[in-house]
Image (tube, rainbow, N blue to C red):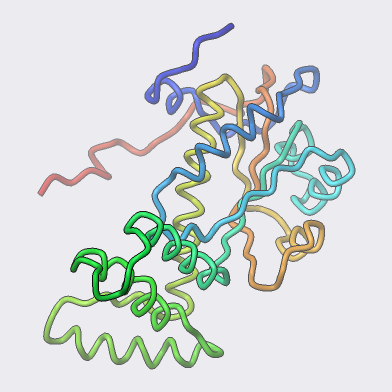
Length: 244
């Protein structure tokens, strides 16, 4: 059995594999375990506004390949993982956090909570709702104007518009997706994140609700000899790194 790679080895091994070996199957349970690592990724306010659809069914794989515009990374994948951003689940996720916190703090009257405990509970019960509540995008612009006026006098959080909160959810989903892909690389499996897809068709295939948004679709398998199209290119590190 090949030993699991270190974090650095897994990162260096990971490439966007465009063609997977058709003769090598991958274990769905191992892929599922990598998804368990995905949900350990950092996430804004611990709201975990994501879902992961692990596709192994041949018919669904074929349908998703068409929705992925026939890309080789989808066509040759043994399995697919659809990463979905779920900003619309903020109420359920906030309630889940409150339930967890109360289970940690103990069942006691509100007045007996410590200052730190009250702050944590109020964060999800009083701060998150006005930030995430929305009505046709209008409420977001009102919040944005208010927060920017307050921001003239002191530092304040400003990402409160509908578009801002969508970005927040997608960033968290992207962090989770990277956890998944590095975990896959660590055990010798390969992946290819795909943004090129007909997201409306993907949602219909998976029967997703209107509020769900496709973050990316990840092809999974083991790379074929021609699976990587060329050497990895990155702009010089010095052009992206600034020490202050």
